[in-house]
Length: 244
Ligand code: BJW
Ligand code: ZN
Image (cartoon, rainbow, N blue to C red; front, side, top):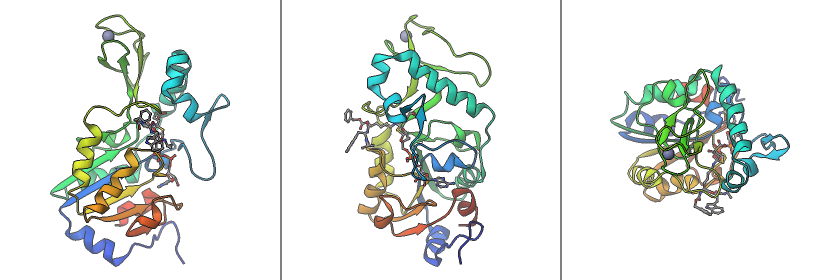
């Protein structure tokens, strides 16, 4: 009988993990769930904000229509994040960078918790909630953990928007291409806490597998990627990762 504290980790996964040099870690909202950050989907629920499904408010179309409403949604989420700490899963991943010759961390998360746990060179496919970007000159501006966010571009005075990738928008230039290159040369690809529904990010495990990598999902629920993975560990990332 499997419990959350004793996840069923196959001997093959342990063996491959012990001997791998090139590892790709691909994370989604579930890796931050145990810190208290709500996921977008999962558990049969879809995140909403003031009655709007998140994919309506987190969209390029909404940004064009109502930038203040989009800011309000992101201000609310930054407020939540202020009191939140990285969890065991973030810390395990950060520890792995000293253990493997070549570890690439690709995240869809915008919360910055991987970096706060000590991960370096994180590829952020969907941007970062702690940055604003000028809608005209594209200069980015850090948003302080404490205090107000800047209300206009310090360089040109124009409006700022969250520096995140909304539905219907392009990913940061080069970010996906770089991640795809790494996926195509890894030996193990760990897919952690993502529903695997959002593209192009969700194609990274497919790229890794096509190039011969061993693909393993870690998630308490089955996803659209589960059947195609070589191994699935059913459990919370914070329980599973420290035990691999
Ligand atoms: C645990 C756990 C625990 C719980 N431990 N696990 C091909 C076909 C159809 C559509 C498209 C396509 N290609 C592109 C599109 C359009 C669209 C898309 O993919 N739509 C699909 C939904 C159908 N993609 C885009 O628009 C992208 N841009 C693009 O493709 O540009 C080209 C283009 C331009 C114009 C037109 C068409 C194409 C951009 C995508 C940007 C996504 N942005 C968001 C919002 C970011 C800002 C914000 O934070 O609000 O990014 S959406 C949201 O989903 C967020 C996430 O990064 C992303 C992925 O979600 P994630 O991380 O997987 O989270 P969840 O909640 O879905 O899942 C959590 C999982 O954790 C669950 O499985 C739980 O079980 C698990 N879990 N607790 C481990 N303790
Ligand atoms: Zn500007």
